[in-house]
Length: 64
Image 1 (tube, rainbow, N blue to C red):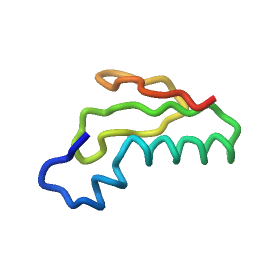
Image 2: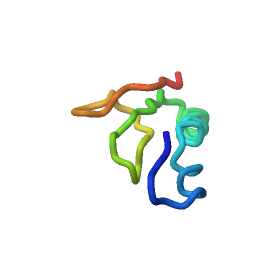
Image 3: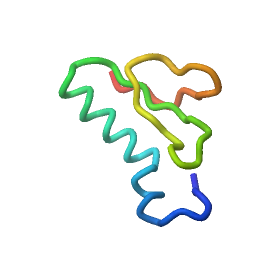
Image 4: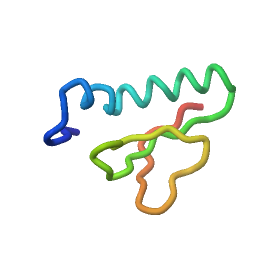
């Protein structure tokens, strides 16, 4: 997903791959399942959470 008018570094940090890596790290540290969801927000296109997606968010991955 490209993020218009933002730095390339921000695009890399806000990538799905980075969100998935964070989800794996949290799963290993806490032992709880983690969801990676798409938010639709260009400044934070993906987020990691322990609860299922809500509202307009879209489920992308589950780290179990």
